[in-house]
Length: 131
Image 1 (tube, helix red, strand yellow):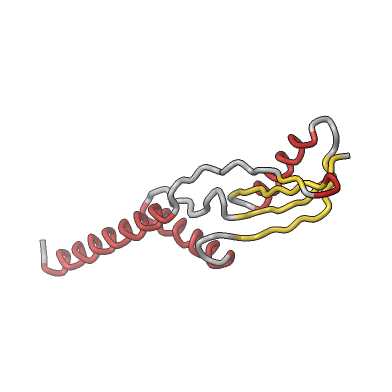
Image 2 (cartoon, rainbow, N blue to C red):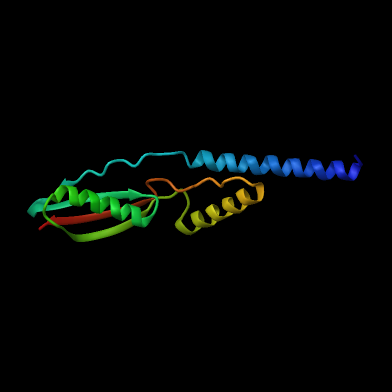
């Protein structure tokens, strides 16, 4: 093997090791977590409050509404107030960029990219009444 080819092989090996280290770090940051159950708190005048957690806004909203439906039983939950909150490691747009970058690196290396989203990245808070 010529000196030129050996240097190129060493650079390629270093790049692979650095990329693998980056991916391992990102996987470590995205440790698996289970979604905690959402307690429902009763307020005055038959008003209830709960929070749904999820990897996405839609999942968080569905979890909160499921909790509200369980509380109301046969009656229909009527949402009085609602609001989202993002709790990711990065801010929302940076988190998307980092996820896209890990997807590209994973595609280049021929590996599946780690999912950096957690089960509690989004919170959907609602107050509701059963009717």
